[in-house]
Length: 132
Image (cartoon, rainbow, N blue to C red; front, top):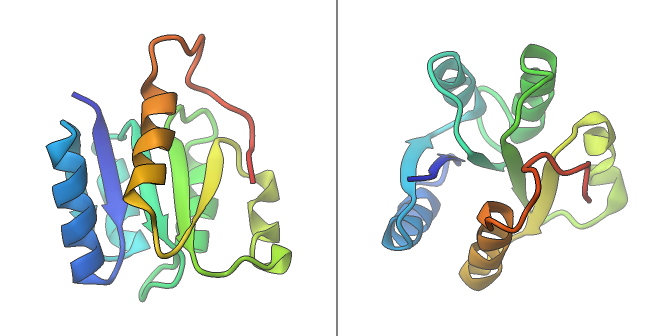
């Protein structure tokens, strides 16, 4: 079963994403901020990490930067959820591989399609280059 780590400080967002993804057969772990997620990564890495940007304690941007520093050879895909579409709000991600932005409000259909494509057995390798 594919493991997905969800990181968001809004409990209703976590609950909806978790329920929807579990219905599709994914194993889900949830975290309220980037620091909790970063601590959990020391124990086990997911197949996919989905994170919000604006959170207390550690933002999604800080989380992604720390993951890139601590796990430069990581294989898992990161989806960053944001309502900010301006390029200056995405510039920080240019040095982070295997990262995609998804606009809020998140379309569950689009998210499911992205995950299906990522986990598709036709893919020769999971490691995709930086995508914005």
